[in-house]
Image (tube, rainbow, N blue to C red):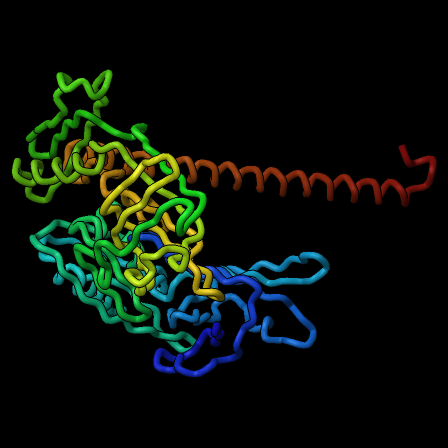
Length: 428
């Protein structure tokens, strides 16, 4: 059953049927590992069933699995003479995208980092928190409970970014810094090294037996075989494959500049091997359409519904096979509860997520490069201000010239009027 609720529904008031029970012709939930989590439904606009009128932006959908999704886009169209409305709704967790992290910066443990992000910034003269949370008449607040398991201290810095990006999608987000995976369950979420509730040996997918359209991709286009890293403390380090192994025709070299609050060779070495683990492998990915364990004699071993983050085995029609490979994306038909598409392989970039390393080639304001850039920006802004003043003076002069021209026109008109009243013999 799929229900819809008003945009101001209280957090403890989703146990009823809300505004209406919807009767969509299609309803799909797509969840990706540390990526998108959204709901897409199509509802016919029938004259004898007005429930479709509740499919509006900001209203909230509850899928048959009990998860909440807030509509952020609707589309109206006609198909075979019948009007339809289609709604796109991200998971209620993305409510956090509307909260702004003003400033958060320190080196600390994972749980303190999250506590810092959820410390509300007051609106007084002495703000002490880090994040703006929206409040006020006519607005609805939702409170989230979270737990986090991340080992070690990390340095983070966020300025004017959304709370969701700081947790999940930023280059140096909490998830990326500590190598964690998010589990979202309405107003509760957890961040752990392994997504909560997932397991190994959760599936055996074989073409022609319990799935169709199996596509296997083996991709070396983004693989690097040599990495050089430098930091703002003057340290440098490198790692590479031995070309004697004969596994590739030439070295594919990458270089990255890192900035740290307290640079050291230990920090640089730690991050180098983390980054190396991301870029040094040929990526293998699988895409499987339509999964039905009722078609296999191993059905009884897979009674639990599949989850994003589960690991298992997949095999295609010509013998390519991967063991202990994880589900990174799952598309489920919410009307039939049937899994229609599974993607397996390495972590993918989707939703809010960006690679942790994609913005690392950026000098901080504390470096000579950063100070030079600040100096140039200041001078450019000053010059721009002076140009603006000159432009204003020119505009004023043009205005004065316009006033003089108007006065001359008035004088000429008065002279013409005087001449028109003279006798003809006196009118030159």
